[in-house]
Amino acid sequence: MNKTCIIGASGYTGAELIKLINRHPILELRACYVSEHSNFAGKTLAQVHEQLSGDDKLAQLGTMIAFNESMLDNIANEFDHIFLATPHEFSHDYLPSLLNGQANVYDLSGAFRLTNPQIFETYYGFEHKHHNALKQAVYGLAEWHAQLIQNAKFIAVPGCYPTASLLALKPLISANLLANNSLPVINATSGVSGAGRKASVTTSFQEVSLQAYGVLQHRHMPEIEEYANQQVVFTPHLGAFKRGILATLTCFLKPSVSLEDIDNAYNRAYQNQPLIRLLPTMPKLDNVVHTPYCDIAYVYSAEKNCIVVTSAIDNLLKGAASQAIQCCNLKMGDIQGITQETGLI
Ligand SMILES: NC(=O)C1=CN([C@@H]2O[C@H](COP(=O)(O)OP(=O)(O)OC[C@H]3O[C@@H](n4cnc5c(N)ncnc54)[C@H](OP(=O)(O)O)[C@@H]3O)[C@@H](O)[C@H]2O)C=CC1
Ligand SMILES: CC(=O)N[C@@H](CCC(=O)OP(=O)(O)O)C(=O)O
Image: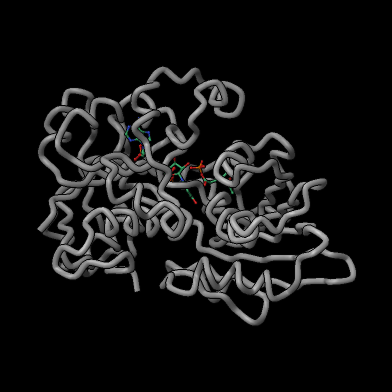
């Protein structure tokens, strides 16, 4: 068994990681950490996440441990896999020390997703101080970076909107079908769990409606652009539902592109990918929420020479925790028959 721990286990993506690791055939959850002064420290997993009640294996794990800087060396060397489901600033500060040990590290935050340190100041509001760790990070977009992930020690797990957007967009880019003179337009709506567990006025039941936010300045725009190798216009929206992201992309195509070219591009990219479902009708959130799948469909207009692509994911799973496990599976390779979807479906 592979010894595994989670830092940030009291949050929403932490809860999903607990469930996925608990049912994985060769990962063994050994410890769950929360912040140093967390109200959840010393509580059992079921006290922190009621949904975990009644699971004997998790009950034996004991309680959530308050993280402390002095534990870094031990954590880095005690485990085979460390999952960070922590705020960007925490990952930024502590991840480099965790890389000094033997463990493989998977960071669900955005702190190491961009290669250019300058961009962090503009979009994350902090100066990036760990340029060597940035260079070591491999962007964990599982379907597109499988080989890099297999050889990496440190995976920066993609953000939720970038996962939905890039999975829809990249087949068109890699087949060179996009028009040169226009930018893809991405409108995406997320459920409220995307903002994490901590209470805030903007995500309170009374306040949430359907609204665009972070317009032209959301940190996921440079992330999408870096891994699409293409500028985009990205607008996130917050919707009055708990989980899921629906992204709709409008893209203009080169004049000579046909429907056959588009079908070939998506089939070539995804026909052997177990967690991508190409659908004949537009995806809906209910079909992906609580699953590790990304559903994709498109409609093409020859008259307008454009395509509208929609993708749907669960933000906490394919947009975070299950993609992290997918990367971990890829890293473990064919050990005991592990494939990228092991423990996920
Ligand atoms: N929610 C989503 O859909 C997605 C989230 N992400 C990213 O994943 C990460 C986790 O997100 P999410 O689960 O939603 O966040 P939550 O706010 O739900 O949970 C954050 C977790 O981090 C812990 N934490 C906070 N500060 C510290 C600290 N200083 N030291 C140790 N632990 C700390 C919290 O512990 P406690 O509260 O007990 O103190 C809690 O367990 C974030 O970086 C987020 O941006 C990525 C993709 C999607
Ligand atoms: C609805 C909502 O608030 N969503 C979050 C994105 C969550 C995510 O993917 O997170 P990171 O890139 O921060 O890891 C946001 O817009 O900030």
